[in-house]
Image 1 (cartoon, rainbow, N blue to C red):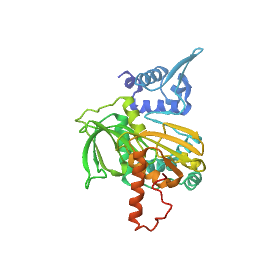
Image 2 (tube, rainbow, N blue to C red):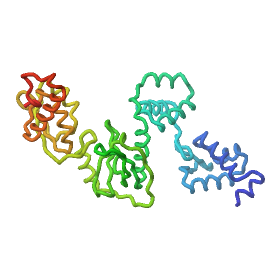
Image 3 (spheres, rainbow, N blue to C red):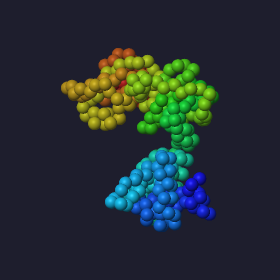
Image 4 (cartoon, rainbow, N blue to C red):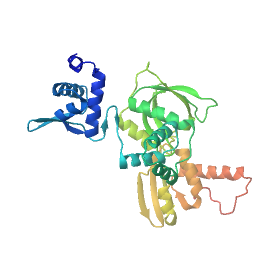
Length: 329
């Protein structure tokens, strides 16, 4: 190789490393100055930088008069990104918001080791209270995220609520929804349908390189996400209409279990219309609202009344009163 002959005893790898080191330190430097600092001639510097540029490094070359100037973007680093100053503090702060997991804790440890001020790190850790740890489910969530990003099929050990033991399921992860409660929208290769998986019910994820990833249309995915309620999507597709008392609307609108189709002001309250597959979840939420809501959808009103009756029977009638009206009828 030409570069090796001109370098004498110095290896090509060592020279490339020194060229990169100087370029990354300065970010913008004249070719002659870079060659002087590395200890090579200008032609060798030009060849090394040219080969780095051809290999994909974001190195720019320009001229200033008779001088040749090389530069790299601020923050770029080979096979990575450099976070400094405020950017590093922002990254640490965002990581501390996340629920503890192996990946999150490893990243915080790396930032802590590289931080110029241990006091700043301790201050951030004490100021931000993260959600409680979710155990292994948070690590499996990371594996499912990688599968969604990498577009490869996986075999998931998953135990549905109706099953006594986890079962292996072949699926293609379409979306990972990280809002709480988190859930994963997958395409089931067996049932040929979209399914919602809860991370806490996952006990293993392995890559299935022998099976092709199946990607569903964006419209189908958007529809499935819209039908989900708190990560649940197992009931029939139903439309639900109920009225929330005006004095309770402030709390109710911030705690609705699903996104409404319509909200309208009426005398004494707000009428809410929904259309989704979260029947059981919505029934439990409406039962808890008691007389703060009036349910206009008859089938849902009956389901709420039955749910309230079962709850009262489970307490032996302890909380039954003459005012009980079965879910705010």
